[in-house]
Image (cartoon, rainbow, N blue to C red; front, side, top):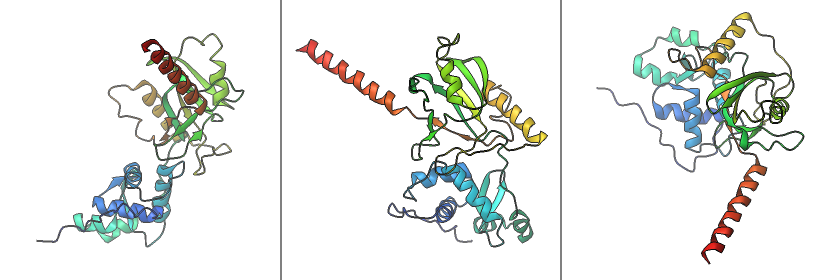
Length: 275
């Protein structure tokens, strides 16, 4: 009877690991294969690094992909977006050496034309009055905020959960959305979703330039957008080839300040009535 796989105990003070070291620690503790998104979540939950940047999931995926190009990589890609340590997989399933060598040269996962997206963001969480309103989002609570005001792509306007309008933003997502706060649609929508072509760099800035995509990528992206926005019950979520990073909305600081002010005034009025 063989000995059980060695488990790595992640101690709270071990918080200054490189991305590569943190990935190895998480996979070793898991003792099996994980999606790079799950690897990222565990790195953040275990606080293995002092900071995580604006795109921690992208950084983990890139770290794994670059390592797989090297002959001595410790990782094995077992399926799309899912990785394990060679040592763990060899111990568990006795994978042949040839299979590991054939997988080591895999290219990074294709994300399609859409690089980032946000679903059902609240209209009231954006400060629309400046000439250039900010559309703030983050991958998770530990990552840096990103301003998507300059994003380009397509967007949906929602009346609660119902889509009432589909539009495109060729130069500024924030500019198009701001226009809809005072045009004929102004009183018709309370939320919005967006799908952007500009990726996010680790320093929280949007990428520049336009990339040419193959027909296959365009078709995959069109399918994925329809599945993501319409959510047909018999389709798998996001389609088979959609791995763009989703960003959760962050409330504009000015909106936060206004909400705190209103809350404080309500407390003062309430205490006055009770005195």
